[in-house]
Image 1: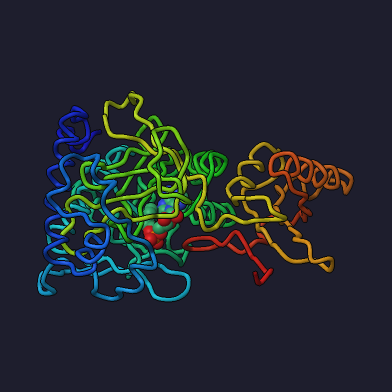
Image 2: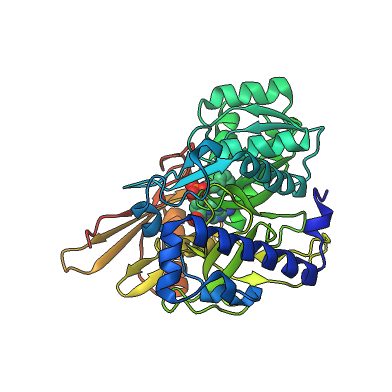
Length: 433
Ligand code: DLL
């Protein structure tokens, strides 16, 4: 179902007009009310009146994660504090978190963005949504919650963790939709298997998964365990949380809610805007946000945009599933490696599970060394050692040819690699560089 055909199926020319009008308003507001942006625009010698078409967005300054940290907590607020109804912070790894402050209208817009997301996955008012994204400062839980409410669906605000209870509730209430990180979806499936619960027999038949990188291989695993359709959803705290882009039934790229969040792809080194189809850093401008609107935010996520027609009827631009981030990119012996490349390479190899850990270290010769721990399917592990040996050699061979670097593979038993209830950690970098 298309939640808002007026905006999602809009004639692209009309959409450009809407985007331009919103950008113009935003620029005027930021120049008048947010000293940080006024001084940035002054430095570049650009004024709101210089924005005469959507293309003029390239005259405006970028915003980086460092800018957000430097203005913590309220430096980018564009309205009176009394209008703020809710605050979320990034799940930030280290240092100062990033802030998203929402007005009443911002929360409504978020609900709409998520209702569009969930409707694209087939959710309706008749669904029962088991929402296992974390509730709290993280945007995942509340984002899905607001979307489900706007759809009129029944939402079970589970948050993540306590998997035995997740399974109990799933069975008792006949949940039809699962929302959580893809790694947690697999974890629940493993626990169900252990507990002798056949997920295929339960009513659960669709899921919205995101907040961390995952692959087609993981999608297939999840879909098989639950007998469901699994959809990729994307977003980030700085822009709104989940609800920035989502897959439709075609499962072929993520539709961006571009009347709300204007995307660009740039060359991360030069800042130059790249044409559709070219891979680069994703940049977003929030077009309607009141609390903490943001200009040309550099997400560090790497993807490309495409505008070919989608069979679902939406006319919005699509972004490819993420290739990785400009900053989780590992440089190993001078070669750029994204953890997701390793995951994609593993897809090809029969006998492995999509659970892996990359440990990068500096060996005695001061050269980078990579150990790749890969979980092996149960059936394989009980096999003869020579088969395991063969599998190990095969993975090493594939990694060498796909990544261009030598990787030492260690096969581990099922469930050895730590599972996460939220975002999983795939890389341990011990190099101290
Ligand atoms: O993870 C928002 C979210 C919640 C998205 C629930 C989807 C579902 P942050 O904690 O600010 O916000 O992390 C944002 O996570 O820049 C990406 O690098 C990564 N990410 C989010 N969705 C995906 C996805 C939420 N579908 C950062 N695939 C982003 C790959 C994703 N990476």
